[in-house]
Image (cartoon, rainbow, N blue to C red):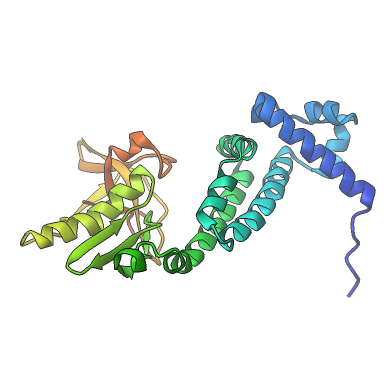
Length: 274
């Protein structure tokens, strides 16, 4: 098999300069200001040369994301393995330049499908890394086990959104640790905390009731776990419908005020209202 040719040093240097210039333009003027002409002017080359190294602007944005994400994944792995993982992670997450660039990339991803796919892939990789480290960190940091005598019952659930979640007890006292954004908190509280509290109070039916209602539009569902998303109940001539919010982030405050529903399983044609 022929050995894959490595890019020449000059090629790698030119790619680096183009990526550096793209980052600066995004940070100073926003992602919408990125074009082959603006990048070429910043680098000091002709505009067609930008497309020699990056065939399309989508490829250029993906290149910026991959380079930044590659660094951050390595730094995050080191932070999670450090003596003070939470402090190290917070320092990493508080980088204003990295945060501003990521916000611009997220905004650009709404208009560039290739970038959106790559953002999702990297986010999944980072979340998996965090969840893999969670069990070890909980024990290592005594959160809140040895220090206050709390026994952990579970820290992972096959529900989306539902991470990170901590459920344990200290004697007969239940201990809950819920995620940090509105939709995730709403889902995990209603599924686990509310149910447990009602059961402790002697409620006959502590679990939320479910109703099957037609979806107003098709949504993609995961077959390996239950997925929830915010939606709005509406009516028309055919009866009740559930309209999921489009592209609603789990941290969105406005979508969080809508009722959470479970995604349908048969090609997303039906949903369950809770």
